Length: 122
Image 1 (tube, rainbow, N blue to C red):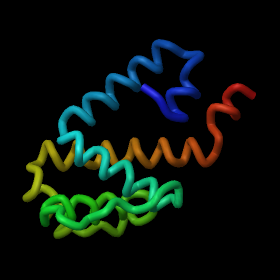
Image 2: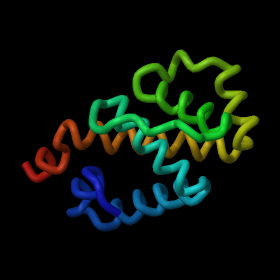
Image 3: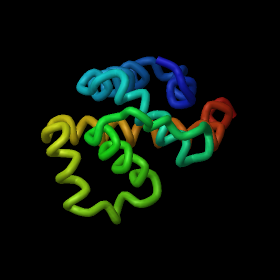
Image 4: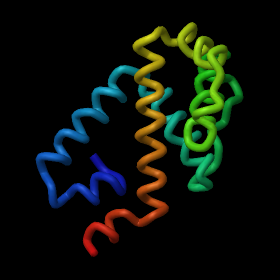
């Protein structure tokens, strides 16, 4: 596991292991390509990378990316219809996994922007 959160947890191996297990379970519930697209889309929302290329992606994947782009700053405005579209694309367990993967990607970006590992090291 890598990233700013993992670096910040380096001094707390038990917590780091629990975080890694949770992260790996969420990522493992989705296709690896979708996880990578979600991470890139969230990073783009934060200005940390370019947006993923959506040319050639199917409608379900584009629906998922539209949903996750709203997670960092507009999560309370996501409508029932938007959530239902993701559930239709991925099923209820997939919807939950997608939401968790997006939230973790958001946390990683925010931790990187805040330089969390440096703050923890103090």
